[in-house]
Length: 219
Length: 58
Figure 1 (tube, rainbow over the protein chains, first blue to last red):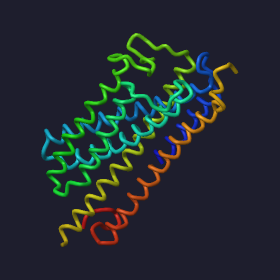
Figure 2: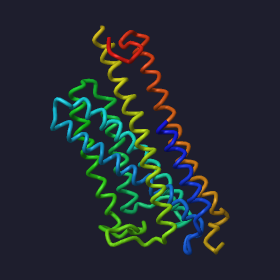
Figure 3: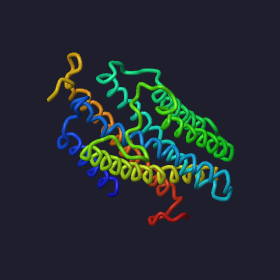
Figure 4: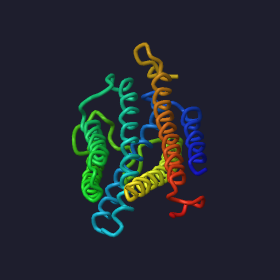
């Protein structure tokens, strides 16, 4: 139910972004990709950081390691999906605005690195059979994944980049009022939907591990 | 409409529609597969006698 409401809210936010906001003076209507690209990128950052925090908590609190490991697994998996979507929508936006699908620019490259580290996390999980070893290794890699996030976020300030600089800073934002409001609405809807997806996936992972454990203890 | 609405021979809405479609389809697929995976696992747990109808461990 939560997921359905979040999907509907996201659909409403998309309609607002597509049809009820005026075109940008520089980019024209193609700027409407902002309302989908920025929320998925922020969801990627959010879930990858959450995965790292769960991983760290799992390493510190050994008695709750299994619970934190499942949370970390669901978070990083979601972060990987959102990072892939951020890269894809960025490429689609890059073609009309920069004239290229891809450029080895600091923001794009660091996002790709974050995505690949997240893929590595998922590979390590599937290749490591021993539960304790898997949980420890996964927790360490999840922390490595989350270390990438500030690097990706500040890459446009740290290096010369083709990507536009941050529009939203502590001093304010460079967007007009209606664009800003619609963007926040889309970010809120995307975060809500990603939370619904997280809870479904977290339950699914817990149920699968319980089933594997139960089957193993019977043999 | 201003001059920035066509990119080569490709109109703006091709890029915008593609961007929204990619995100919509991927998230919907992910949500459906997550829900189906959960349903299948819970069914297996019940069928194999590891939990009862209320979902409590036996």
